[in-house]
View 1 (cartoon, rainbow, N blue to C red):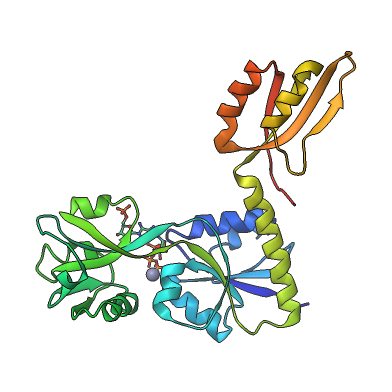
View 2 (view 1 turned 90 degrees about the horizontal axis):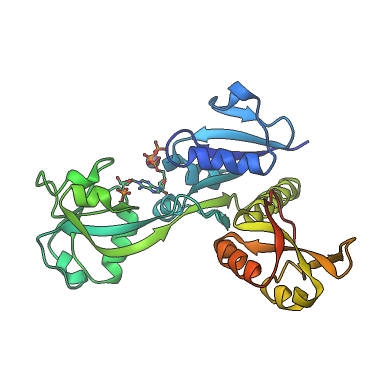
Length: 286
Ligand code: PRT
Ligand code: ZN
């Protein structure tokens, strides 16, 4: 039987979330096998190939791996032909231009005649060309943010997340060229058999993602409060309402967004709900 080979970053920022995603989708590897170059899952037709993230787009384009989890920044930079299957919602960051904080910035032509240090020359060059800016690109890998301080460049183009690396290097972010998050990508010519395995994998990921920001809520309420309470609880299709053994009392069950949870609970209590239970949801299939 065919196996789908998934490329995962071998260490670094994407590793833990990638492995958690596989685990949430029920894909299990034998304990000590995780850090080998190649390891097979024992309960799903997937094998994991661990690579540097820079090498992942090429590996997928060439079919060395069938699918992969990698940052959008690497996909944009490497310009390899791959299919983007899904955004995964983690490793969110932006790719921004930053300059010494004492400098004044108004618009892109600030960068005319300047030297910009970056590990993402292709993304930067596209933006410079689109904006008719003539700047010199200085490619460095790692510690790009120190380049202005040591006079290696006037500015930098790099990944920013909280912004604290820029601040501690006396820089300020002046323009976001693009944002990025982890993507599930695939080779464009998967066999039907591998495509079916990928579809099953995506189905499982989506069940986990659907459940992620949701809670299951259960409560009891008297009959005369029922209608008002139901207006607050939309549910997946509609809330489940069952009668309790005690006359004129109902049990209501529904799904709510975690972000709304405390708000909803306060209102439910005011409306006369009792015995409110909030439970985690592991998977959700719509
Ligand atoms: O060894 P390998 O080549 O595989 O790893 P790597 O060193 O190239 O990448 P790694 O592990 O650092 O990051 C992997 C991916 O995580 C990146 O390609 C992005 O898609 C994503 N990501 C998300 C980030 C960040 N957030 C991030 N903050 N990658 C890097 N950073 C760095 C950034 O380079 C800068 O030095 O963190 C610093 C900025 O962070 P703040 O919070 O101070 O703004
Ligand atoms: Zn890398």
